[in-house]
Image 1 (tube, one colour):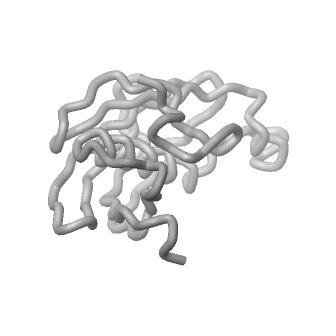
Image 2: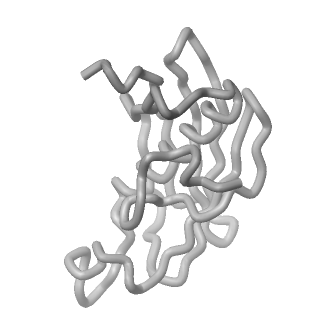
Amino acid sequence: MNIQNYLPHRYPFLLIDKVIDIKKNKSIIAQKNVSNNEPFFQGHFPDYPVFPGVLLLEAMAQATAILDIESNDRDMSKQLYYFVGIDKARFKKQVVPGDIIIINAKLNQSKSDIHKFSSECHVNDEVVCTSELIGAIRSKNDR
């Protein structure tokens, strides 16, 4: 699966390296490899690099976008998938360079072009972040 065919993001903001498993209209498992040369580590934090929590949430949102696009065979040349809401976000453990983040997301509810997911990030089988995310598909002409 070529992730860049699903998401408009590019380095350094493309946060999904690999899709491990996808079950249309149900769930996705994706992976993000955290390397020491990620640009945000220069400032977060120079002497104690920690993967930013907001980027954990963004990685989860990108995984949910891939799930929606694959499930609905969307023409992404005319549409964008937006991260529009977050509930119950919790950060349980720090993520540092060298970690491999496994992202699990499940579709909970779908109404029209708005979708609600539950998601978790794991490192070494330990939960590092959980949240409920809301995504919406919109035409590129809707600004």
